[in-house]
Structure formats: C-alpha cells, structure tokens
Length: 446
Ligand code: PA5
Image 1 (tube, rainbow, N blue to C red):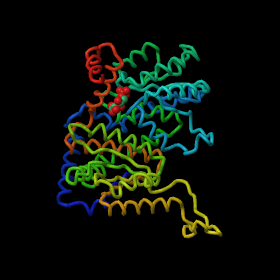
Image 2 (tube, helix red, strand yellow):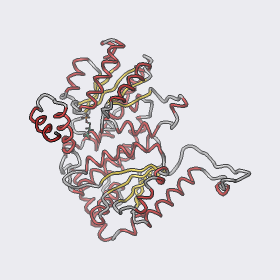
Image 3 (cartoon, rainbow, N blue to C red):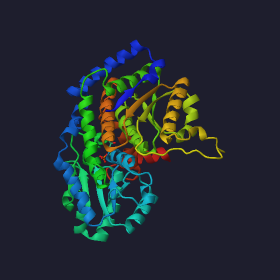
Image 4 (cartoon, rainbow, N blue to C red):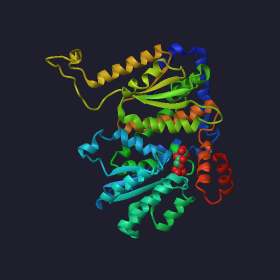
C-alpha cells in the first residue's frame, strides 16, 4: 500500500492550521465519494479497478497473441495527453533500461506517435516502420484531436500500402468514444476492432481503461498485476480517515500552497525508470488543478542527475517550491561496490555497500539539505517498482488528485484551457469554418 510521509514538512507547518486542511480534505473526500462535486459525471475511473473483468484482459491478450502470430514486431501507439502518458509511464517503469541494446523483448516493441507534430519525427518513424512488421493502436477519446489524427493518417497509409486494406484492418485497433467522433466513424467504416473509452472517464484518468491497458499488454507487461495493485489501492483509499494517504497528500499540498505560497510542487525520483511517472503525474495535476487562476505548478526532477542541474536552484533559488519524493523502498537487482587495492578514487569506505544504499543516502541527504534550504518535503513511499505497486501508485495519485482539486475549489475533470491553442492553430492552418478567426489572427501577427 502506498504511504505518505510528511515529516519533512513539520518544521514549516503550524499544526493547528494544517489540521484545518486535513478537515477540508476529509470534506472533499466525502464530495468525491458521494459524487456530489463539480464534474461528477466524470467519476467512472474511481471504481474502474473493481470492474475490469478477466474477459476484458483476455481480449487485450488475444490481440497481442494474434499480432505475435503474424510476426508483428512494432506497434505504433498513437495518442496524446491522457491517451499516451499512462501507457508510456508504465512501460518505461517496467522495462529493462537497456532492453534495446540487449535486444531483449518483453513483448512486441511499442513506440509512440501522435504526441507531437514534428515532421522529422514522422519521417524517422516511417524509416523504422519500413524495416519492421507493423501494427497500430490509435487512441483518441474525443476522436477529433489533431496530433493523433495527423499521425494516424500517415501510419494508416503506410500499413494499407504495405499489407492491403483487408489486412490493414486486422493490424489496426481503435480506442475511442462509444458513439461519436471522427475516429469512431472511421473505425466503423474500416471495420477496425474497437475498444471504448467510457464516457465517464476523462483522458488523464484513463490509464486503467483500454487506453493504457491494451498497449501495456501488447508490450508484454503484466496488466493483471497492474490492475490488482490499483484494486488494492482502491479498497484502501476508500476508507475515510485522517490517516488515509490521499487525504494527507491533498491536505498538505494545499496547506503548503495556500498558507505558505509554495505554488510549485516538484515530483522527485531517484530511479530513471520513474521519469515518465512524473510526466503522467504532471498532466494529471496540471490539467486537473490549473484553472480559474489557481493551482500548484507541477514540475519534476530525476535525481541524482538533476542535483547537478536543478539542485542549485532548489537549494538556494526563489523559495516557491515544495518537493514530493517518490521513495522506492527496495531495489529488485543487486550491485555491490567492491574494494579496490589502489583506492585512488578513495571510495573504499563504500566497499561492500549496495549502490541502492548510496542512492538512499543521497535521497536522505538531499531531503535534509532542502529542508534546511526552506523547501518542505513529502514522500510517497512504494515498496518496489513492479506492476502491482505501479497500479497502486497511479490509482493513489488519481484519487488524491480528485480530493486535492476539490480542496482547492476547482472542477478536477475539465480542461477548458486546452482549447485556446487549438483555436489559434486551426485559424492559422485555415481549417474550414475558422475563416473569421483566420482573418483576425492574420492581422494580429502581421
Ligand atoms: O485529460 C484529457 O482529457 C486530455 O488531456 C486528453 O487526454 C488529450 O487532450 C487527448 O485527448 P483525446 O484522447 O480526446 O485525443
């Protein structure tokens, strides 16, 4: 079970005032649980771990097995934001750091597209596709997002040209809305196998729907353990208590922001495998809380690497931030530092110690230094980086996000601000129907 440790905040906190925030978080817990808050038609993610059936997981495995039989060795997963980051973060966390160089395969190699509009990226993706046996999972809840639609047009044409239209339909799976959107229309017309993103689950809360689970399964990772971990968290976090880790996390981050002006939260990891967990978390909290002129800016660092880049700023720069450390209790591999006869690097005092012991001391030393530097510290503890614990972690952050955003006083489940860039982009690209906006934006940039 995920635990939250706030000892590193104690010296910054007025206990009585903090307890008010615990009270607010408990009220927000009720709002979330009873589904009485803003955006309550988007709470499908809350009970999702309990309703993922064996049949559903079997369907994902069937696609993985079918593509394996065809010799598929590259799946292009197309999606952006919540239709990409969940799968990406789980795969990065569970894969061997050097899988490519070792030519190790957990399953079919999955690469991502539709998360940028770089022409070079797509040219290079097609270089790769040309050499491989390709299939595609195209994901868009709305079915109308430009970046994945552009990517899909390119990938679809490649697959159809190589394998023919009928075989292409067997190599393309669409994940989208049950009834509406351009992708749904296309999938029906082209006879693609299709999975549905439930209406009541927003993109950034969709990792435990087909959006996350199908690519993760195809890539060969243990979706069953991931779901079990989420189920475990779902049960544990469903209990109203001031000891509930989601309540503690939501209370403390709101206290630090509102009472101490700590308006930036840095998610810190000490394991490169967790880099994309932070990217997923940034979308989750950034889009859920950053609205109505409010919110805590979500940032991240990868330590110890970033102690040699951002460390200076965090220690002594403007005092805007607090840190939340993703603390992993146990490494799953063992590397011991050996003694050296010459000891020219003067590291013999570490002989016999595990590298992870040094990592933990770096983590502890950094936390204490940052506390001394005026940066409150929280820790989110997970036992190890495996599918079960990741499932728990992702669900924990989702549940805590709902509570936290309600404490902040915003609707966690909309993202009206995302439309602004799209409107300008469509005007600049001269999309039909945007003629007025095109004329206006032209004048602005002359
Ligand atoms: O959280 C959200 O809903 C968004 O960030 C979406 O994930 C993102 O915009 C992608 O949308 P879609 O899946 O509709 O293409």
